[in-house]
Length: 208
Image (tube, rainbow, N blue to C red; front, top):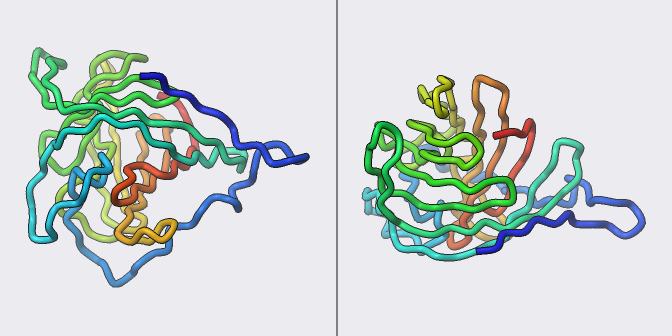
């Protein structure tokens, strides 16, 4: 499935500025929330009382906005497909989603403690294990979690921090905004919206 990325160009001024990116309006009344897998995939959200982490079938391509380090705004597409079985680190069989973005071809699975979904494979470095990249399950406003992660043979710490546990993005309530970092300097922010999946990325310090 082809994946393309193109910069948004403002007439006469080059790339658009971050001020043109949408703001996810925070709903401070939501202090605890069960985050379903469907917020990642863009599938319809389950009933509020559901506490199941279900990898539903998905095969779709959808756009996102990328706020770049220089303040310009880019755009790209994500192709997401799965679930499927895949053998990765130490021959462990994972249930994964396959994701293609402008920078990478990746496979995602639940972490050991089932509090996040993260990469178990990335074409740029190979297998990974126990990366926290997207929070799932019960989370609280402002909560931060660290994950002892293996990227091929390199040990690292990946972390998730909830910035807006519930917010409204482009008129869509129930969106989520959070920060993802690693201890080797990678730093990104993400907004996911119900029925859409990822809608906005903040690239603070990029890399793989």
